[in-house]
Image: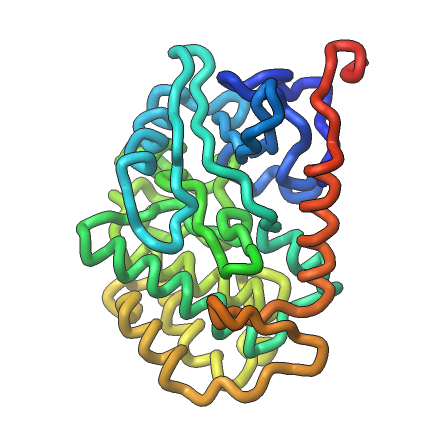
Length: 297
């Protein structure tokens, strides 16, 4: 659980903020401000999101409403969206989950290949479903992936679209992870499904090596060709999301490494250190007291 900062809002809609979801060290690559908040009666805990400082709240609100209308397995469902023109927000039901950068921090380095494969397959399934419905996520990056005991949940829908309109340069903008941003999107092109594929390649690279722009020799041999294909600068050279899913599920994944816990319900393996970090977060949130004005001084 990350402590609130003085510039964090004490309340978002009907919810009182309790903690930050993202660490200060990785907040620069998160497209929105994500906080854990609770209703005043303590009965409902949510992940509440607001635009980054300096972002266009109107474009952000459009994407938030778009996410609220979607029902795609693997996306973190947006349950509520509201606010005013000057302070928009949306919220999803809280579940113990860590952003992928926090997962690698808890693990102490890159993830085992079996975990990377399961992560990639789950994300590819989500993207394939979205693309089949004509939806481009346009916000995938390591920070957008929340890892729970039930598998990954994809957040930050539409971050590329909300950062700047089509036709304007997006490269170098705050909140967009440059290593996950497809070249055509960085130059202002309309986000399309193959841009999501580029971002998925960056996420798989990050999970495997600790960074989104890999040296070929760092990548696991069995994943190297797939990740390099996803990161092709020419969109036409990238595979489709459903092809990535087939590759990850048909190739021999090997056995889960020692110290890995398998959730039999979701068939998603998690390293023991990550399971422990999720348990700590859950316990800290349950034990957290609702803030008072004096507690922010």
